[in-house]
Length: 610
Image (cartoon, rainbow, N blue to C red; front, side, top):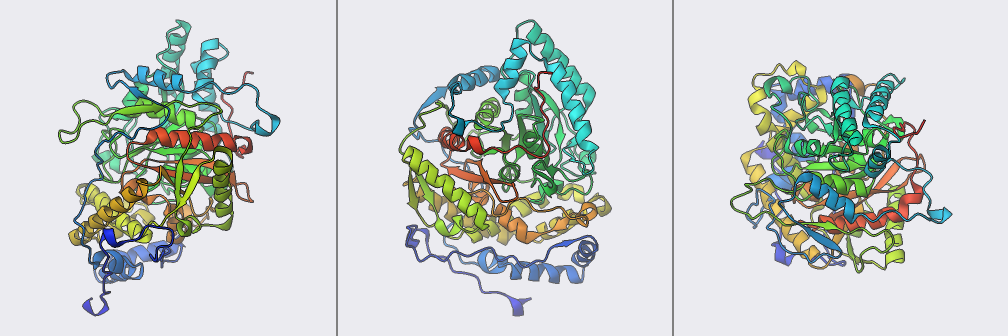
C-alpha cells in the first residue's frame, strides 16, 4: 500500500503552540467519510471486511480516508508516550469544601454528603418553580422515614412499571436482566430496617440500576452480548456495587447497553434498543443507554454507567439527566468488564446534581491497599448552598469547538453560559484547544486497541454469528491497529495533557456543549443488525474525548430543549481531582435551569401517595 501512503503531519513542540484566543491553530472538523448503513448493507459490508482478500484493503482506505494515517499513524511527534492518565494528587484550594476522613465507612460518607447539601428553599417565586421534577434520593428517604411509603411498596410499583414499559407498542427495553424476586427480597429487608427505625443510610431502599458492564449479583454480566458471560462468569459484586449495597440501596437489575460499548446510539440487536423517554422513537444514546433512560423515566433516581468515550455523558444529555464521570482512578474499577483500561471509568447518571453527589460519595475512594507508586488522593466534598454559589469561577471556552454543533444546541448552551455570567459574575476566557480532532482519532485508536486486546482470548473461541453485525464491524476495525499506531496515540495523549494543564493554569473549568446533535430517530432497518452511523456518532462524541483520554473529571447538566422538545446538555471539564468544584458549578447551573425542566413522554411516578 506504499503507493497510497499518506505523509504524516509534523507536529510542533507543545511549548511552541499558542493556546490564546487569537492562535493561528487550525480547527479541523471531524472528517468522517462513511455512509450510514444498516440491514442488508451492513451484512454486505461485514462480508467484505472479514474477507482475507478485501478486508485489509478496505481497512487501509477506511483509515486513510478518515485521516488516521495522516494525523496519527504516520505523524511525527516529539513528545514521549503517556500510557495511563494517572494524575498525582495536588491541593487545589477549592472553595466551600470539607475534607473527608478516608477511614469513614461508606454509610458515614453518604451522611457527610447529605449534610453538605443545604435543604431546598421553601419559597420559590413562581418563575423559578419547576413545572416538573424527578423524585430524589432524599424524597425516597423522607417517604420511607415518615411511613408514607415503604421500600416494598415502591419495589412493587417498580416491577409493575418495568413490565408496562416492556409491553408498550414501542418497548422501552430498559433492562437486560431484572429479577423481581431479588428486588422484593431486598425491599423487604429495607422495609424491616425502616420499621425498626434503623435505616443504614439515605440510600436505604432507594432503587439503583447498574449498567450490564458492571458485576452485580445475582446477574451475569453480558456487556450487551449474548456470549460474553459464558466465558467470563460474574464472581460477585463490583466494588462500586458492593458499596451501594452496603448503604441499603436496592439493586434493581442490569440495564441495556450498546453491545460491548462499541457505539454511541445504544441500539442493541440482541436485547432491543433502550428508547429515549422524551421520544420513544429516538435513541437514548450509548453506550450506557438503559441507565440514562431509567433515570429519565423516573424508575430510579440514580444509575451506574461506564464512560470510556462519553458513554455516561452522551446518553445523560440525550435523555435530559445529569451525568458525572469522575477523575481517572477516583472510583475503583474492580468488577467492571476490562474493555478499556486507560480510558474507561465508572460514572453516575442521576436526576439531579445532589443525587449524583450522594452516589459519588458512596462509590468514590480507593480501597486499601492502593497503588504502591502514588499516594491515595484526598477526598473533599462540596458544601452546596441553595442561593449563594461559589464566586470568581473562570470558564475556558474554545469558540470554534463550542460552536461546532447544531444551531439550536449552540444557542441554548450559549444562553446558559450567559446566565452564569449574568447571575454569578463568572468570567468566560476565550482559549484555543489545539488538535481536538487529532485527539478524537488518538482516543479511538486507544480504546479500539484496548478493547480488541481484552476480548481476543474470547474471540478466538467465539462463533462470530453470536456477535451483532455492527459489533463485527467495530471489532474488525479495532483489530487493525498496530503497536506503532497505539504508541503514537499515547504520544498525542501526552501533548493533550500538557495543553490542558496550561489551560487549567488560567481557568477553573472548560465549558462546552455535551453533544453536537440531539437524539435522532431509530430506523426499522437497524433493529436486527444495528447501524453504522459514524457521522452522527462523531457529532455525539465530539465534546467527550478529553474526559476519557486525559482522565479528567467531567459533568453534564441539562440546560434546555430543541424545538422538538429533545434535551440539550452543557458540559463542564475540570482539573484532576476537582470534583467538588465541578459539582458546585453544575449545582449553580441547575439552579438557573430548574424551572425549564420538561416532563418526558414516558415517565413513572413511584412515590405517588395513592
